[in-house]
Length: 204
Length: 229
Image (cartoon, rainbow over all chains, first blue to last red):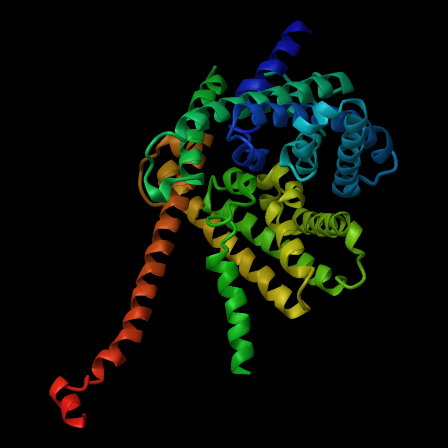
């Protein structure tokens, strides 16, 4: 049990990192990682929505859509659930903590069209845990607890990559870069080197 | 008629080159990076996005006067999600190999920024034919870019071209995620470099074309001017 949890954590954070290995959520990774502060806020917002979205979509799929055999509507259902969740979360945060809303609120609408959220919801629709977590023996059936754990740590992995990139980009701004490499290209090349570092975890 | 053709040509050129979704606007990056492991995969992904883009652009353009402005984004998302669901069913039935290799990136076409971006920026404001051309042009621009990245990664990663073995070597770097970021970054830089050079050259040509007639016309000689006086 403990080994299973550990494997899920390592897989979600490092060896199957959402940004650097799975290529999910690249848009915020390139768009909002100019400063470490904004990267942290975006990462936390994404983690929160990922966990909440999984909490709703996973039971929705397995307890409502599968018995009614309307699995083919999953894309439409999920995107609606995520959009509604984001909107709701925005309102709740605005009411509870205006300070937090000011620092994080602007990132919330961006999350609706974030591949990472829909990606985690779609990836977790497997019956066997080995379908999402690499290096685990087959036969452990998926349940809501594992799904939530995976979503939480996938979000943490996302935040980690965002923060690392924010640090690199803050330093990179002061460097002389060739004109055609400025902006996206140099960020991509930096991300490439970071991905190499994360690739090592997949080899373990 | 000629003017109309030029108008459509401009829309197509904008979609293909000036506003190339992959290299110029850097949108829809997840699909680009995730699906470019081989040329065939990236070509399939590009065509899938093109089909969804065309259908959603046409539909949104048809409905643009009916959809209320305040709920347009959710309405667009539902239209796009429906198109992707249809595409998924078709692929599952007729091209199962592509369906399998696309995996999670097939449903993720819904959140591809290119499609929602074109719906919001173009299809919701323009007539049906314009939107259709824009959809196809943007989609093909994306397909070309994706296929290019796919060809580069497949060639260096496994020494093959569209699945046909050309050379007997393989560099693991290009098949894993680090190579995807690297190749994409270099491709953007090259695209920016080439388009900037082309623009500079065309500007120089235009200014030369403007200058030549004024120089060709002989200036009145100073003494002739004095004679007039």
